[in-house]
Length: 346
Image (spheres, rainbow, N blue to C red):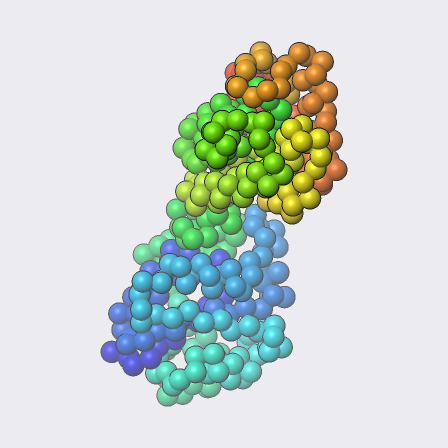
């Protein structure tokens, strides 16, 4: 049993194989430091040609901290190579070794890893009194690598940490004006693809907070709807299976604020985020009008005008290149939307 061990890595990204190795290392130590090392220039190269964007040092450390939080003798620390101007290994071994001692903060007598070359390149020279322990170099326990996940995260979805999946899940926003089938399509897509969805919180806000009386809406109510919608989205992301479907967003809430009150709410604009979504499926209002209890009615001319108004609001806020308009009957809409969704995660 080692008194203090160190488990360093780039964790780009961290995955189930890493967790397995860390836990096995933890059984051999009274205390284990998981050292998340990060060099942004090197990692930018690693992610080139892959299907995911580079991940920050804090995000990697956050995910590992969540996964290991109930193992009290394992602590996650960060080694920021950028802040210390450390060259990539093997050139930066001397500076990296000094920084490793600094972030761990106490003597250690074991280093755990999965590659013999690190022992040969640096650990033997800079930590001669420390034992280098190899574990599962052939990845037999979990046949996956960070490289494989970077190149095809959806093929290796089961190996991605649960805490990290919200980052990788594709986010499909379903939007449109009243009675265009958003709610039904959102649920159907989620059920067919065995994943999560977020309901339109504004639909139920009046009943929960205003006794069902929409005449008493105030600006603050619409901002509160945005907050509740974001919470619903975050919850859906936690349980997403590669992709999640989100019914409306802050732009729709602003749209209704203008319809009800005749003015915008500036606070809502702080919740508008086109980068949050991978694609925006905007349903056209050419299906039969079905009253849902709201006070806006639907002759064809008015529905078309409101659709164009909402579309313009999205374009003005930077969503233009993500919008895909979907029309046709309910069957056509489902088929088209499924094709788009499957393409995102193939």
